[in-house]
Image (tube, rainbow, N blue to C red):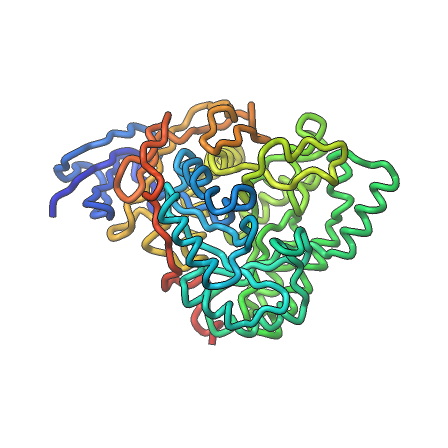
Length: 459
């Protein structure tokens, strides 16, 4: 077999980092991984001391929330520039969520037309909708479903009540498909927001108290108890508080299929430290809470976090310019900052940062969404999706972002590494300065066979 490309560098495999290593690529697949002398190849890339990582998988993105399905193009272009070769996109597209087979077909067509990287998809359901639609989406290859306990929009992002949530968990119980939840109790949040407005508390420091920790935890436990009864896989898509991860772990220890996900911004920002500077630029839901960073990192170290994502949102900065924090849009861009931000946090904690990135940003999400070992690791037979990460201080400049948004709460932050190159399907897609591949280079990914939980928990 002819070798088209060899990449040399510090190769980060699931077992170890090979200091004088190489990855050999034939066509769009990894042919071999080794150390020392590499096989002859048509092209050799020597990355020097840079880390050679599996392509990053961002398990939570919102490409279509503002621009609709054409938003896949700038989001995936930004992904490639951030070393992200696969995104798992949420279903709440503008104006129609991915809740029926015709919506799935339209989004798959849009992926094939617009995407620079590979795209896996969440599906959802609408209130009163037949479960037959859910089954059609599962047959169409969606990798997970998501619902919300809080209504952000009655038509695009509605609240799903407990009765339908239970039906969904029961229907999914014989499958490996997770049901994700946006976990905020609607009555508590609306009451506390109204109270804060009446008291004239309008800044970012009022955001967390107006959507208090108990609203998040109450919604989380309610959902987990439904899953314990139904047998489905309950996944909390963003937990902002260590207690949330402990609650999920308590259920998991009892044999419930329960998982929790952390977004990288919860490891970076604190409203008491950063709120005055950033204001609504750091508004997300559930909120970033004061004084939690160290404790959240401990949850990750102790293994209670499934994986880390960006929760990238494609809202323009104008969405943040409001007189009150309660009227500002929630969400931040994150495609190009996920990897360097997480690497920086991990390095500051004194752990093997490259290994943590490979595990929490690639292997774990690949396993979770049924994409492993095709994705998520530098192993023979896997897709040749590769990210080269060069250590060294890099000050993030949002004006250089590829997302078309060109704003970020990370603007001016110092990262400990930068993405030097991204290879997608064996081809150079980003050279450290510009995205080189074209819309339509990406593929729609159907859920595969890898499992997060042992087989005996799904039967």
